[in-house]
Image 1: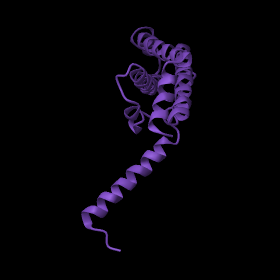
Image 2: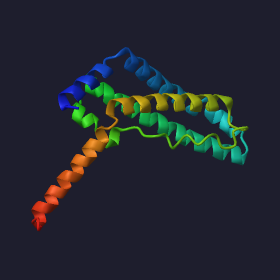
Image 3: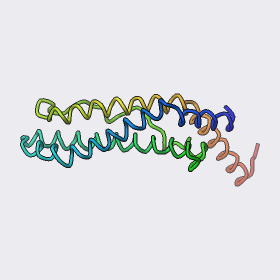
Image 4: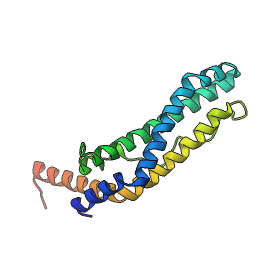
Length: 165
């Protein structure tokens, strides 16, 4: 896909109602999670057993990591829409979402507060939605940019060491 076509497709997506809904849902969940973890969640975690507290801490870290990845991805797409970032920059591997290896299920779930379990499930859903959108928008581009990068590296090596054939 040409760079201009890709930039147009990315800009169209970032201006869509689907993106606006996903952005609002993702950012609202980030705020809700922060409020929960700083307030009621902190209180609920104090009542847990040692194993329950460890499970709570583990799930909280996974949750915040997952949500920060989603928020970052959403903000990159918005930056493209608002011409604060170019489409070429947005396609960098560091902004890609991959299969969520954080979704390993609840440890000691019988003790985790129901509110935390609910937020974890919703966060996994929004992550998966953003990951699928990422794949639709950028899928295949990484392979092309990766192949291009390898080709460029080989050209530099050949130039540096002189191609002997």
